[in-house]
Image: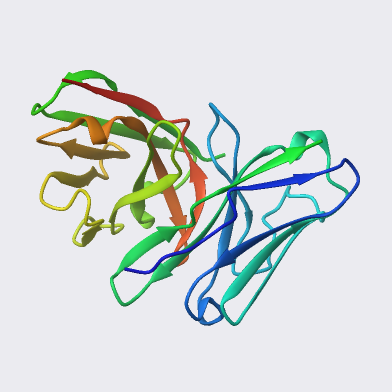
Length: 108
Length: 118
């Protein structure tokens, strides 16, 4: 089955840039979506189709995808960005939807 | 505005069954595929199942295939997850999600907690 690997944690100071990677075999050939999940709340889509933002998501959130790695970048990090972040793809080979292992972003 | 509300969670004995519901509003329910996703304590998000807009097609993760059944009633704008032969590994918060396009989980409910007791 298709596996997406993320670093367990990323720490960043307020105002700095956080980069969260998502590794998968030839992930660059797939559309990658990213979700923010705060405890006790519904997950929120923050980036879709590699680099597009839903309405209402700040421009500080951006994404890229190439080769074997997709990346979610959060610029000018704020305390409210503290959350778990998950990448996700659709694997057509298995007809399964796959979430990454998740990354906890901590704002120092 | 899209609104998804899960219900049916609670404490259930190992080996027993439970049916979850997801009431949808704010969009044309019968036009969208729907998913169930869960999060076990201390773990990440795990995709479980998808059902097509008209209910004619579905797909399951290997971890629940043969035990869980996804279904929908478009006349009631409601999604279901029938869970059988539950084990402690099924203890989790269960979310329903609406899909946009092929694979974008664009709206989620708040989740309902299922605790399987041994």
